[in-house]
Amino acid sequence: MNRLLASVSIAAVLAFAGAAMAEVKVGAPAPDFKATDSNGKTVALSEFKGKTVVMEWTNNGCPYVKKHYGAGNMQALQKKYTGEGVVWLTVASSPQGEQGYVTAAEANGDTKARGAAPTAVLLDSKSNIARLYEARNTPLMVVVDAKGQVAYMGAIDDKPTANPADIPGAKNYVAQALDELKAGKPVSVASTKAYGCYVKYAPQS
Amino acid sequence: MARNAGRQGPGEAKRHRAAALGLAVFSLMGAPGIGAAEELVKPRLLSESASVRPGGTAWLAVELTMQPGWHTYWRNPGDAGQATEIAWTLPAGFSSGEIQWPVPKPFATEMVTSYGYAGKVALLTPVTAPASAQAGTTATVAADVTWLVCEKICVPGEAKLDIKLKVAADAPVDAANAAIFAQARAALPRPAKGMAAGRATDEAITLDLPPGLAEGIGAGEVAFLPFDGALIDHGAEQRLQRADGRATLTLRRGPKLGPLTGAFPGLLVVRDTSGAAGQAYELTVAMTAQ
Image 1 (tube, rainbow over the protein chains, first blue to last red):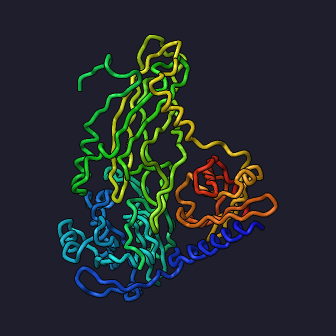
Image 2: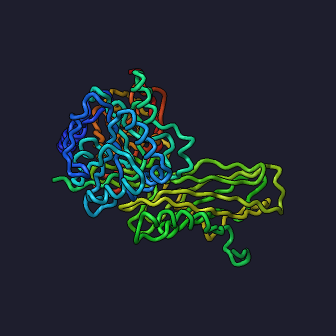
Image 3: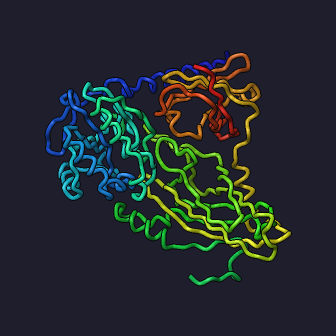
């Protein structure tokens, strides 16, 4: 075999193998992490074992996030399901200098101003949790069941637009997964392609 | 806005700014310091000919000119983004066809790979007149174009464009736009000879490329871009292996889980050893039993 081709192939195999060792997979344990929330408290995913957890990737400047917050859709989901005992973690992974970055004070200001009701807002400005979950979009929604397994990962709903008029007619995958988990049913749609702005990453350290 | 049919170039459209401005204001609220959405993208609706024959097909183009550094998206935007959409309003009996998408470029960050266009892109679409269309009449064709344009941040945009076509027995090509249409056609993928056989596991999809295509690749690199955005991880390395004149390409799976059946189309983009873009083929992958 041509030596150049062989070395290119080997490099590609190694790169592929690296990429294939993703931590997050529907049906598998959700990768654990520790983060600081907007009130300075340390939050670990593992502390919520026994509860259903929603992780919601956000960027307060992204038109697709603003679609759901502007229409009150995200807040309504947060209120309804935290009211049922679900833990709702909003994750801000943008690094300083990029759209979506928030200080603790700004995160709390946003929560108050828009009437949001997450259990906690995680400040992930080194993008560590994003990298762990291969978050590519805002909003990205991950539902972790009480056993700590990823039960749903993907889009918030089935209308991948920035138009709030599309919300009422859309099928909300998060609500569907949470309702099914509550009823002890299997999650009928466990994985979809998320839509929205791309997640801004801090340079890998 | 006053009409000025005499001064407009043949086949050039008028723009209605209201919808674009409305969205621009909406976008400005979250994007301080950024220009209005319509300035990031300048849209035009062009026709290859000023006329259309009764029963004939007129080729129209939605041309988007992006500010430097900004890009709009392909039919499958990749990991993030949103494809440009065109909603047509046509006179009775007229019909429109599908957008003919030029071969896109990848835009990659550490974790996200998208497909789209920078600079300028012309999206060709055929519009067909009914045989009953009367020569001497004028057909107004309207396009409601929505797009997402991104640089480091993303801004949705919209424009309502329209164009007047004369219904006539003769529909000569308009010299003013000829270069734009020729360039747009040259940027389209070619059909591949033969299909690829696909096999899927939980982690990967492997494509067996048809022999003629495999030979044509030479020592260059290939990438497969499916039209369906949920099938693969667009940023993952695509491993090409060759043996005995055959070539297989292994792709990392995306969010669509479970067995894959049937067939799905995509582009096979070939780059030569210097990385320059070579050929692009529209290739259908037929999934074999798993």
